[in-house]
Length: 65
View: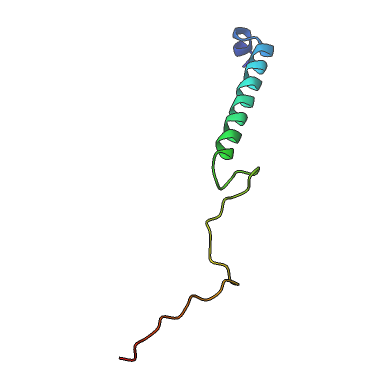
């Protein structure tokens, strides 16, 4: 393992790793914000559903046949 650190500067490797992980986390958060289900700013957009308190539809008139 010590031979690897002779090839790479440890400080530079940690800085590059931190930049990469920050970029990856930002990308994941932006992808999640672009979806309807996981957007925590606007909340989930739910489709319009008939309310339980909605009035009943008008009855269809029958001609008695």
